[in-house]
Length: 351
Image (cartoon, rainbow, N blue to C red):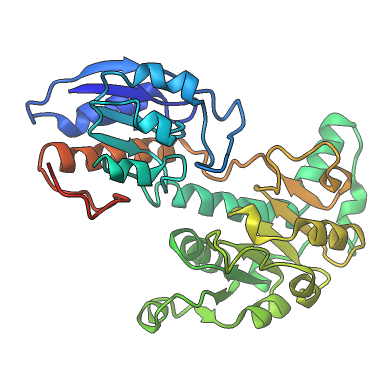
């Protein structure tokens, strides 16, 4: 089997190769490898009208596709041109939660399954979210920066009007209750004793019953009662801009907004204005309207923001899980002759 390893600086080619060989051990399959390393996350992801959140380009990737039967990748750019430049390609397996960097329609036209790895970083993002809540609430980044880089002792942060609230006495509102949001609820409720409010209109009554420590409510109630509002919804037409001027106006003045999900969920101009004017205590942001933010962004003038460069999913385990799930899908398709559970184009017929 001719395998193209198209890893990057997060899910490396070595990780993909180890996962593939571990999964196929004993199957009798042999591998002939070619490999190319993409530069994400050192180089930012790109998007265009055809595919999104990709690394590399047609000119960079197509020369490696000539003889490939199987591709393992994380962020590789697969446009229609790239897909049709791979005459022997049988499957693409992604170590990420969704196939946004692949023209899946073109793959379907050619009968190529697009395998992916949902939930591979849910633990990583959930833990990171809890860290962001604590960091912004207790002024950890701000005090570290002043002490470490300015040699300035911020005793004023101990003053009553600057001190943060303990999580055991706080209400955490979760907008979205999928793999990540539900894990954040467990951390904040079980670990810290926070009261948990949840808004997610897609969660069934049966699923709600499994979480007696959570109160499911409407968005306006969640916003008005929460000390921390953490976003975990998917980017979709109905969620775009769901946190805007009106919604921010419903939040408590001492509340903190946390976004480790998708930038499309927030009207960032409205958020930055509220933060600048003191209508919110702060925000903790891992995703932005532009990545990296433009030099003219108001973000850089705000002191009440903890900002990180889209690091929520960056754990060693997330990379390994993503590669393992991609390899699992390939094994199901190539060895067992079945469509994997997590494949975009489920209706393809096995050839």
